[in-house]
Length: 61
Image (tube, rainbow, N blue to C red; front, top):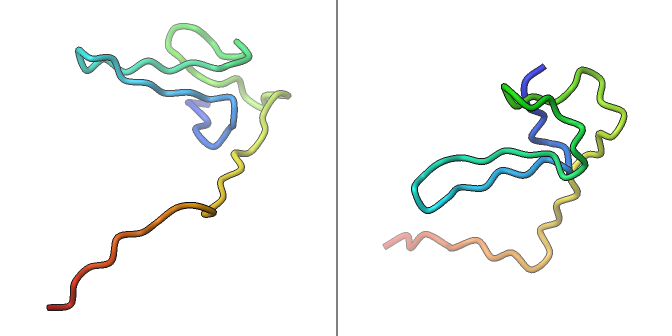
């Protein structure tokens, strides 16, 4: 398995130089190459709410 980006423990950050850093907050991943273990027992789906989000409207003009 590659990376399960739908897990709430998965974090991806970009550095100022443009490098991408991927990690598991729990350290349950395989280090090199970064990958989530098959059938990870720590998997928890992300909880994303639209509360407080604003979607810009396109002007029909």
